[in-house]
Length: 602
Image 1 (cartoon, helix red, strand yellow):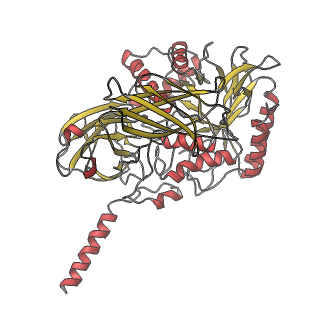
Image 2: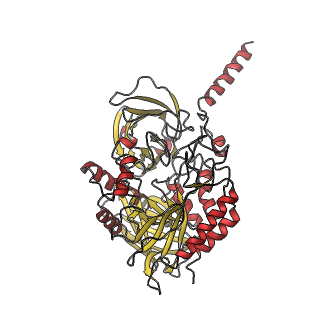
Image 3: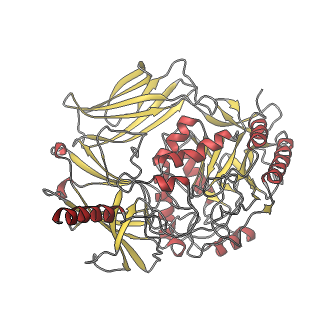
């Protein structure tokens, strides 16, 4: 009898542990939601552009509490939350709103591996929306503002023996603050979506030496057949040096050494160029030496590719890839998930949208007012997709933004708002500076929070002259940057042309098709135009494609179709929000897309 009771107790405990988490709500979900193991969430290495062999994942079940702003750490927590899914999401296991008058608290314990004893231990956060205060063993060790970029702290001085207590406090005003927040609003409707609060990317630990590498900036130059590396370090001193080696498989292509702090220029002779058709990546090894001993080593990669603008033989300014005219064509990609909101359920899910974009015959993605985890950009690097990267908009309500879009005025931001915008934009650029897939920076979209356009565009270009700058996609236009970007719904139309910059159609389409069983909501579903079945949608899509082909000789050098997937109340995706149905006739769409992508080939 005692054995039976003990067995039942053990079963109950085991089931109880598993039952601590389950997806919440009755909204649609992706197939990957069923594959989530709370004890092994997003286990992939989170920073493949600079990889070390040793690390520890802190994703999983944490305790959480929501309480009024300004309170002390809760003495009682409300339950468990699955990190790294935002508290409003189904996959968090919570699905609660927070608001600007409350703060979200997290707590968990962890142990540091014993073989890290003589190392500095870094605590990394992939992204936390928006302001995070971090406490270790009841000591505040730092804070960070910015919902889209990684940050870390050296926690070594605050570690103790045994278990470590980690607490994170988050405040996010969503659309009631000045911070960049993309399409999040407190009252989701139409093209505006559910708030995302808190940790939404991987949390992890990493051991490093006192002297270690902190950042890699790699800028290729195919005209000079080289790559210039800027390697940032910490803890280094006079006499320390860096060694960089570029490889093609096992073959060493180029290698050199340089003192810390000096740019490193590596020749790449007879380079294999990166393109959507042939996304070749070179492996890179970066080593740091102190006192003539190797003290740190990271693996990375780079690619030889060039993006530019040049006048063609008809006098039209064209986008170029590797010194050849290249028509950039792809979908507007919001990067939202019905179950994880900002966070894809699995890495397989993260890859899915990119691969389908390639399958559909596109060569580009415009990442719309959102920044993805670092792995997303590595997948684009490896699969071969050109990426236009938006700055997430923010500051002021959607109603205010739309009013100012139509009356053609720039706003005057507060000093705090402007400083924050510049800081977060620089962090985003630093994050993605070495990813070859990222070819265009887009600081503003449709006048949403737009200010000092010429100054921001010129700073962006000066900070990264290796990429194109699209200063205001569909917004208030100024003679600055590399691109004039027009929006027109639903069909392609050219109503302006720029003789000094490339003219592009930054948004068009929005062909809607609500599919029962795959809808976020049963009513109020929205598209610029709506049809009843995939054939009708495809007919309209192909018609727009033919119109676009007619406009390319007149001056269009790129186009962006709205959009990759349905998102919440929007039903104008090529794929349903739950990623379970393709809403177009794929072969016909691929055919017209490839004709468009190849339209400037000679």
